Length: 99
Length: 294
Image 1 (spheres, each protein chain N blue to C red):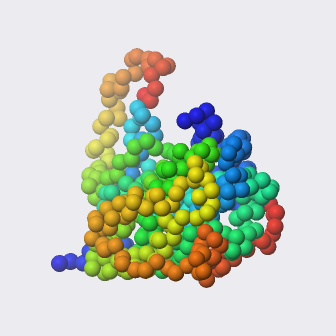
Image 2: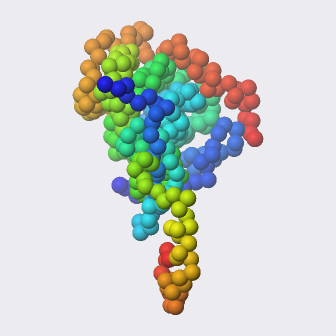
Image 3: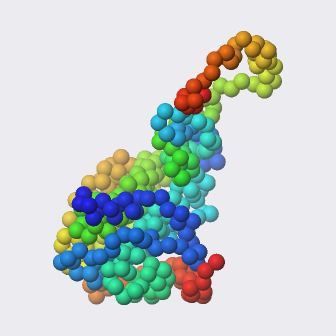
């Protein structure tokens, strides 16, 4: 049997907060914790001290699959000149928030 | 809630600009704007003494937690514990301010916190005990917050609307403190053989101080509708502790309570040797620079 992880080996978790009902969860930072339950409590103690949130998500950083900076051009450049994909031909009413 | 209680609670829940308080920074009265009159039929001196007891518990415990700062095993845990210490300091401020108003001798929270001597403090001995290690920190916080939560749950229905409002505000904080401590007691108790052994030893070291928490005292007895009978919360606290200890695979220690000194203990102003050092650290700045502001 292998030794349990020591404290310096606590994995990294990414923290997402929702400020109020109706908004999306937004990435606010990361922290170390031994497991997801501890990560949730640490998130509460580190990121909601000033009444910032009504909901917290934590995700183990190792579970996130991210796009690679090396592939930036093939990934994102082709969409840059296709202006017909942008819905610019109608006006957003003033009272529609969060657009 | 009656209208009186509702107003007191609202005033306490309101956001203020007073979050960055520290000694000497000219803070405002934590009970400013609240009707602080003592309800008819309530012994004002006893009410003052009672708020002093509860306030001292929080003030002294908060200071013990502050002594862990820069010594915690992880940055995240340090912030968590600082939050707990700040919650308790906030409770201490309100309770000491209430004590000063009720006794009517013109003493404010600062005078009560910084200019009383050892024998005038009324905190239970559990609050002043110095944690020998992290397991003692977790175990002591579990016992203290489970006990205080049970007491404050009852005080939320106190006949003194100010005390009831302070208790109602504190209950949510204490519920989180209890949860935080329980997580660690379970994690350590149900962890490795080493952590289990340390957690069990920690409980054995703390347990002699548990009996005092449920000891009846004359101040509480003089305030039948206002105060919460400590003996009356024993069953509730025992049930919580038994649940956590079972989940943590820990045994309830079988040790004798700490002997009282001629029948007296923390609530009577009789403290342990370590208390003098704690108080010296807590009060040294305020006493070196009385009434200083910056």
